[in-house]
Amino acid sequence: MANNPISGLPVGVSSETATLRRLLIHSPDRGLGKVVPSKAQDWLFEDIVHLDTMRRKEYDYYVKLLLYFLDPEKIKGKLAEINEDPTRSFFIPGTEKYFASDHVVDIQRLLGDILEEPNVRIKLTAAICGIERCSYQIQEELHRFDAHELARIFISGYCSDKRMLFAPLPNLIFTRDIGIVINDHILLNKPAKAARTRESILAQFVFFYHPMFANFKENIIEIPENERHFLLPDDEKASDYQRCTLEGGDVMMVAPRHLLIGCSERTSIYAAQQVMKILFDKSVVDKITIIKIPKKRDYMHIDTVFTQVRRDVWVLLSALARVGDEARKKDVLHFFAPVDVNKEFRILQFVKGNQQHPREIENLEDLLTEISQGDLGVSGPVRFIYSGDNEFPYGEREQWTDSCNLLALRDGVVIGYDRNDKTLEAFKKQGFKVITAKRLLEKFEHNELAPQDLTDTFITLPSAELSRARGGSHCMSMPLLRG
Image 1: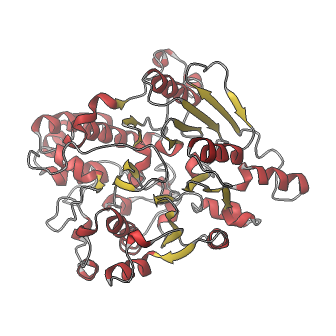
Image 2: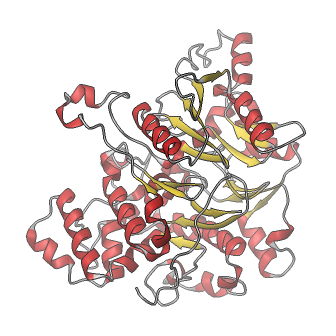
């Protein structure tokens, strides 16, 4: 690992739409192809997926786009060679042809790097074998694998001799959930579901041991567990006011001094309170807005309900917005429009030094307008694009397939799924160009267009298999550096 070029690189995120410079991803691995129907929902997938289609015809476009925008030297002029390679080695860390970008970084690569160190290998192997209840013989056997194969085993659960040693980690493709960068600090998650426990241990070791983050060890934040949690009855441990769970999809760094935290089925009020206390004590931010959304599988995290497209443009679900309220007032007897949909929706804003007197914000549009104009200095009107073009029943249908879950590569240029037709029409109505990832890559490769030429553009990813996993391009990224 001493020769690894990823060492001591800058980390800093203070916006959702500033130009993306570095991010953490994880390409679909062999474990995804081992998910069985009876365990799919336990492992937080809606369905089993066809791994080869997800990789070659969907996610690989995502990686290629990221490389063209963040590290073009790694991909320019190589598309034909990459597409014809049957081994897919360009995308697999530890292989000879792996792209090995310092800007588009696969967490599996970082894990393989730290496993080169004997001390880290011993500690991490013991930790993983402990939570997975492995035999001593398996623990000893794992030490015989090379570092990058061991990294693949820890992630996929699948051994090179075709044995399953652990359950797979299909959700690791959603790297947003393992942590979030808040200015120059890194907040590590505490997953809500047991299926993600191994993920958080792997992430913990990567962030504390990889030299890429060597300059930020003092800025890594771990959320403390309730100090009395081991004495609480099981029913109280599950309480939103006692359990300590947080995932990155519920955290958005929207402005240099303003953080959003969602309280959802995956992030508890207790955890949000602990994060607020730590960040205010460290003066990392001055303002934290907590958005409590219904604990529904439909919503999961706040980034499935809204994301920022441009400093003055947001995409959101109308059912949890002002226009949704107006629609229900006009049509409260509609068969599909329950009047209590917003019963659990609430927005409270806390300011450092005055946490005892939060300000309540009535609806999502008011909050997002305030962020754009008050925090980001937008002088003109703030625009909202609604899932499904706010047309019944497409809003909820397309939100389910991640119409609101977009990754901004820079201000006004976003990646999302191709299947959300009505939402794409809404973007076009607002002046956005829509282009497929395949067509855009062809234009880049033939010098017909360059990434810096794009403005107000929605880039569509093929998504038949990716959408089964219930996460979009925002979920599939952990930005490390913007600006």
